[in-house]
Image 1 (tube, rainbow, N blue to C red):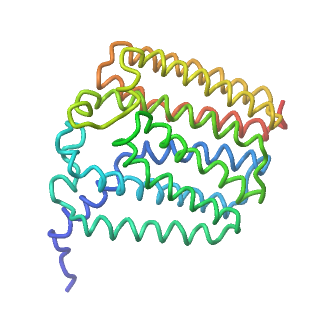
Image 2 (cartoon, rainbow, N blue to C red):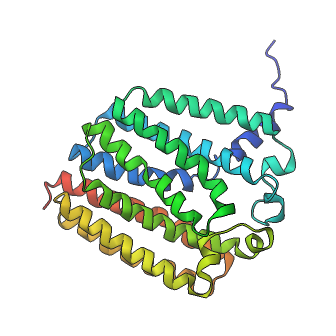
Image 3 (spheres, rainbow, N blue to C red):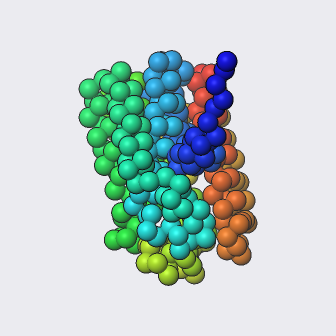
Length: 295
């Protein structure tokens, strides 16, 4: 006779999926888009399919592991924040030991994937681990933790170039800087959601640092990002479709400014989520450039 699945495992599985934000793919998508930009640029078109699969899976694993290390670092603080007080490490649905074990498994799987690339990519992966692991703790010690997050979320760019082409052309750092500034912009909007709670518990963020100038500084970051991305496109010889994608992205940024105009938490969160369309738009611009030979 077939055995019944124990219902006792269901809540644990749900809690583990909640821990890695399986039901909230926005973080994975925001991490994925710059990796795809870089892969297409490095290959000057469709990249190696094996590498594409590695980066797709690796992005999911890295983001999942990043969520765990973030929740482990914040487990004694998240209970005081409305948005995070139901996280599994706060409620006790997941123990610290279980979370650490899952983190190790995910990191090992990610490292195994990297071993299928090349030596340069393996070396760069060490930087990815350092950046991703340090961000949660930077929120306690520096006023610009989003700078570290931006560096972490952009690190797939040099890794993608290393994996696809075996080289790190200087122009990739313009792309890196553009993505870093974009990350700071959307994560500042995200931090505006938690600003009042973060002030109470002593967590630092650019939303707190910028204060009443938060919208202005987000606009500065958005414009600076577009400038860097435009210069990167020029350096890589991208044409009409890529430039058009930047124009559309500028319009999307304008919409984000509209959403955060009154600094309402739910609207700031909507603006954060909507950045997925920016990443996708730029990717379409890059892909179309090579699909149409840059016309």
